[in-house]
Length: 112
Length: 112
Picture 1 (tube, one colour):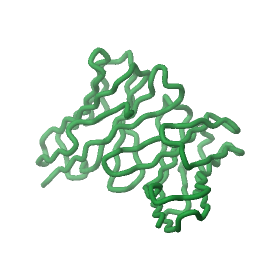
Picture 2: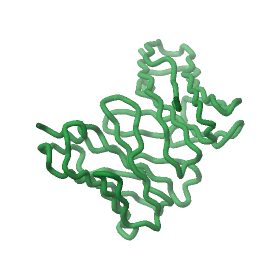
Picture 3: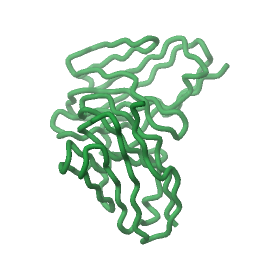
Picture 4: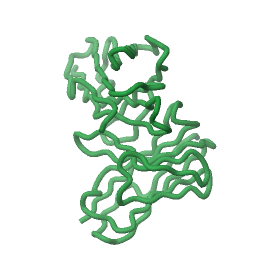
């Protein structure tokens, strides 16, 4: 079964607004990563947060991790049309060996 | 330039005709993996490799084979492709599952 599930499946906002995506997972993890994918292309790494961290920032990105709720959120502030893409979380489970499990993704559309 | 390359990028084939998708990385990464991406299902890991001659099953290994004879290469083999293997395939590499994954550009496979 899938480790990560993103919510919402799709999100449409206006340029300049903030976009928040959530990821929930089922078992204890070592790390959680967020990736971005532009239409049918390879994924690009955005940020990694370790299980002992609660929040991390990178430019306009802010990621939080709540291990008690088994969830993470990705906030993109002051969104731009160029942020239009699909966003995926990925987890490596504490007892999952060396497997990396991706969620189903959130499709973000930022309109001018 | 650091990169992961895949070939071919597009492939249309018929049921039962053996095929190989190549993957190569120039970053001296130990960890390599293959994913398939299907609408609504996100990315699912097929196989991964921790190092030369060390491979293991991901979440959807049925119908696929891999080999890791050299550190830089990790080919994906479909010995008898079937239509349900029609998908977008990605190869990725990194220093380990807990690190940023570098993705190839993808191979779009259609099996008729």
